[in-house]
Length: 274
Figure 1 (cartoon, rainbow, N blue to C red):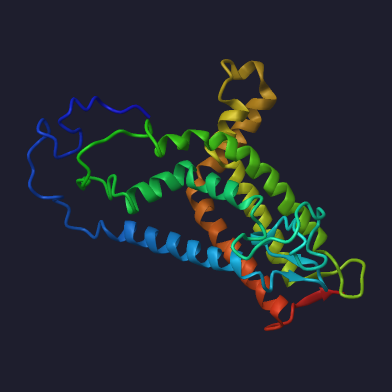
Figure 2 (cartoon, rainbow, N blue to C red; figure 1 turned 135 degrees about the vertical axis):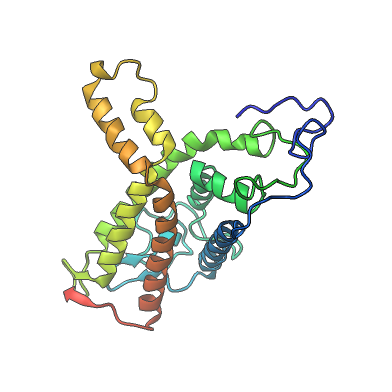
């Protein structure tokens, strides 16, 4: 994203060469409601996810092999027995390091650099701008050309890591079809884990980077019918990227909360088979 020349006098809406309008906005509707709801929603998820990632309790149900996505993959000897599906790559970790530390920074990076989330927190947190036809408070505009916002350009690389994490979550969901007495088992927890994985795949594949990977460099769609078909399917998902961005935050919390309740003994998993 390019930025206009500054020339030392500022490029914001209050710059000397811009129209002189004293009011911040002439809008009379509740334009501030959407940014407020966005801040509340993102803050609620961040607080919940942060607390759950550090508490190190009630994240694994040994009877049914339910593992919360906030702790997957669990690769440390600090993980409770059975929860390390991919072995122990690390020894005991101090309490200030979450057990899912291997992928959590990449998932955070993927979300933070996501095109939709950029719009969400640019408007609601940075007020750039907070709403259409509402003046932003910043005197200068540099876009994503300087630190720290220039880091947004690595979004495509976080996307590749997100694909790997989605595969891991899929493995966790399949492994969870485990009965209390061994063999195949199926309960409400499986429905929740599976639904969460499906929606996470939908969110990941609806990413703008995925759309670019599948068809962004093609000059002649007619010469690449398979890639063109894939590109059209990803484009359909892409139109729902905002909805999936919020839905997956909700399903992540729901999945973790359900696993926590079952693991702590607060409720019993509703079992359909074994």
